[in-house]
Length: 448
Ligand code: SF4
Ligand code: SF4
Image (cartoon, rainbow, N blue to C red):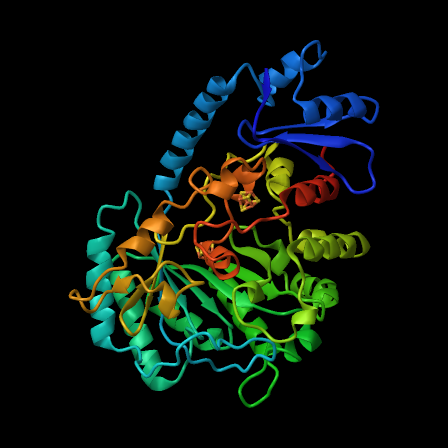
């Protein structure tokens, strides 16, 4: 008998109980304090002869009779994952400009080239010719995500072109998501409605309550933006569009989250169903060059802070439900989510484009020269076949560091751009504190 390579344990904060987890089979059990010493000893030695719970552990997939039996299970689950993955729609990201009408205090995109090309009808037509051909055999219709700089600028010249892009999306059958600072939603939403644009989701950023947000996210003229964005969100919701409200969290604004949650509650947003209003807490400074590095959170630290704040202010529990590596899923569905063999969709289910005619793998790499994969305007330009191969072969069974990692089927190998930036290769690891978040999440959701 052998221990599955995917069996691991996690500790709930301030508890003597131990969680044993296996994402391959979706098993999670609690080991009582009295059983714990023997269990941990056997686990460390991988020795199971005469163990009272051995049969149960085989049934749950923590143990296998031999390596071959485990390998067969891995192959079966990988096939199931691949079949489901295939059905995921491709996300086509279009970075329509690098200009922005905001001058946020904390971030700047210095890594990006500030090029002269602007959105125009020719590039839009070339974009649609390319994607209509490239993705014509996809089993599910892809969708387009508008990305910036700021995608929803209202300046007349830009707006005319963006509207043309949106009309073409509608006419060619693509729904559209957008990542925006939300400042011009009041202008754009009525136009979306009148022109029957299939808006899939609007991701907007509010960095805390009014005071906190307005100390960070200001116009180029240094004016606060909270009220106008909030009115835009409200209009979008009343128009039937899905809002994904995101906050970029660091040590400066975490404490303002309860007040943001109360504000959302007062406007009735928290009563919309999750498919129309949802929230996200981000640390996107991980991907971009940032100032104030001493204010930034490590991933685990941010969720520990959130959990402790939510205990003090229960409104936060209504405002946001952290995923915590399947703990939210388990809480809501009574089972763990299926294994994730690959968490990075770049150049598989995600492709990105910019107005220079360049093609990239995803939002984190769009506009950065070293990640350019090809051109959609110049067929004579060589395609970066080697880098595409690296992206497309990236999963936790091909990445050396991840192959034997017990938590890999929830981590999925992390982000390829971060792996490359910090560890020197797209196929390197970008680890997540899975065990710690499982313990924290199990406690938060009262599981086990
Ligand atoms: S490289 Fe990172 S940001 Fe890009 S698709 Fe992969 S996980 Fe997402
Ligand atoms: S990136 Fe790290 S934590 Fe994630 S699967 Fe690979 S080795 Fe495990």
